[in-house]
Amino acid sequence: MATATLSIDLDAIAANWRALDKASASGVQTAAVVKADAYGLGITRVARALAQAGARRFFVAVAEEGATLRQVLGPGPQICILSGHMGGDTDMIGDLDLTPMLNSLDQVTRHLESLPGHAFGVQLDTGMNRLGMEEPEWEAIAPFVLEAGPELLMSHLACADDPDHGLNETQLATFLAMTNGTGVPRSLAATGGILLGPKYHFDLTRPGVGLFGGRPYEAARPAVTLSLPVIQTRQVAAGEAVGYSSTWIADAPSTVATVSAGYADGLPRTLSNAAVLWDGDTPCPLIGRVSMDLITVDISHLAQVPRYLDIIGPNQTVDELADIAGTIGYEILTGLSPRYIRRYYEGTA
Ligand SMILES: *Cc1c(COP(=O)(O)O)cnc(C)c1O
Image (cartoon, rainbow, N blue to C red; front, top):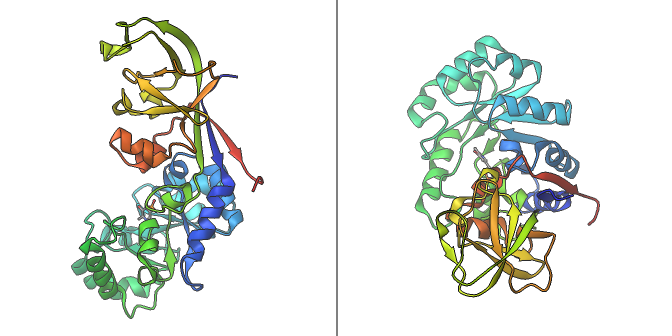
């Protein structure tokens, strides 16, 4: 059957989680971040594989994702909500035993009034200026919030993918100043923070992209192959153009394969005339514009027409494709189309 297929190696994801778990000291718990449908790979199978590997605490962005994840995992594992306790989420948080990371005095008030005694954490802003309480606000309400017994104090690094960036040390110092002496478990590191070293690990780490084979975790096992079926081939003569706006013109007689996927499937238009697809280990240049549902590829040099061409795989990682597109691996992963058939491999290691 000719369907664009996303192959996901659950063993690789589990191995990446174990390796990141080993990268921190023995007292440090390693969580798993599975927001945005586990970075586009499918939260159901991915979260189950991570739970099997040993993950006991999960992070998602919003309560709806937490509700889905609770159905997948059943009772037991802790599910933390990074957006905190938003208006309208109280029933979901209470009924499904979700743990919101409270981001503001408003959220603290909402949570303690609507669900007294229900687990929560606190997110602190140590310099990213995106989410969480800033130092003066926290100082003012910390005694009262600590009284209510938070399970976790956390913050997020803005520049952890750059070990030499000065903001890492600054955020670390701010985090220490805001949390020292509280006696509450602490978390500062995502994938990049784990790689910065032990002083960033605290009690709990929160890797996401590294689990799925992405930078900055260069030692990760790649977890994804994306194979696109060839729909049709044609011969074009020298001087003929291919695709919208005629941006590619054959300088010799050529064989062009049209494959099934385009920018509506998360393959950015910036890949036009720039990316490479692969027939096994043989590179085949993407020619012309990426269309909504189609891509055209020069296969003149192939001995026979392949059934599929890979655009992500052993010869071209998610990050390498992102480089060509002018974006980051995170954006490529989370944009992976719901139209792709997701095939999961496990138990093969
Ligand atoms: C997304 C996110 C993570 C995971 O980050 P990665 O870089 O994918 O490891 C951890 N913590 C917070 C607050 C996040 O938003």
